Amino acid sequence: MNSPNVPIVSPPEPPQPLTLVCTNCGTTLTGEYCASCGQRHEPHVHTVGHFAGEAFESISHADSRLWRTLWYLLSRPGFLTQEFFTGRRVSYLPPFRLYLVISVLFFLVVGLPDAPMYQSDGAPTTPQIEEMKDGAKELEHATGPASGALKQAAAVLKQKAQQDSEQLATGKAPVEKKEGLQEQNAMTEFCDEFKKPDPTANRNYAKLHAACIKVSEDNGTELGKTIVHNIPRAMFVFLPLLALVMKPLYWRPKRYYVEHLLFLIHNHAFVFLVLALLTLLEMIPVVGGHLGLLGFATWLYMIWYLFRAMRVVYGQGRGRTLAKYFAIGFAYICAAFTVLLLTALFSAMTFA
Image 1: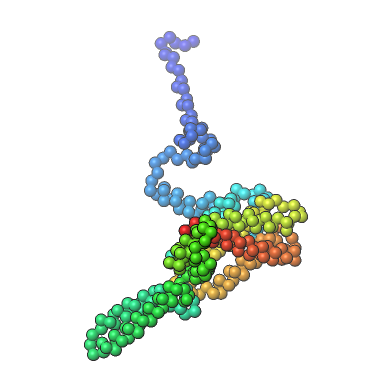
Image 2: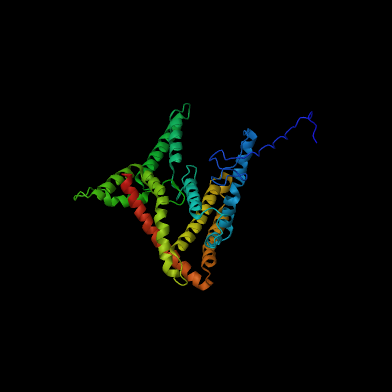
């Protein structure tokens, strides 16, 4: 029996467990990441060291998908296409995103102002002409006993610079260009057909006529830039067209159209990536002049890579694959020429 003098004390209630919620959407958290929106739970105040570590982790790991995808893209022909259709996709970048990123990188690299320039047939370039003009000006102001002979030399040098400048302006001599692009005077030859105004006043002819006037003014420089700018857009027509050509070549066993399209997307991403890396190496002053053997080996590897990718993805023998390899190559050239021509015409009409 309890004593009446002893107070009765109730035991303290246990503390209620804290329920963590996502600061972004308010969903109850069951782990480090929100199951609803995917945001990471980080309630503490970020320090500079934390931001630096997070940036390094993003660059070095990138969820591991970027580096894993690029490695398999370069080293294992057809592997990514095969993985996609077998359902193993989460470990790699999606094909369309991969193609977009690499194609943007490629066209940015080939469009850099420091891209390799070269000179054809020993023709003088614009910087050389300017150097001759500057040298002539210095000789013209020479004084002393030999000033007469120096001024005569200045006159000869100035005349030579003038002749070279006129040849360069009229397109009779090769001009500076970026490696891999057509000569700019080819554009002027194309425009010879549209120099005179059309008596029928056709709207499309008038646009080409106006574009050719601009081509004659700058020797096709701006039009060439416009064509290069439009080529990435043309690829969205070129790849589906080529995939359509491949469908009758692989009609047994039945293949879906999207299989050929994704095969081409992965292979073009590979080619763009390799050419971008090769172009960057050529832009390095010390390395660029010694890439002859490496460049040749790279082209051989790309030829083998595409053949091997066809065998891996479609699983046919060497002889049949080789025959289809050449057939697709011929179709590729024809389709590329057609799309490039249409791109040039479209660029000329919008350029004006």
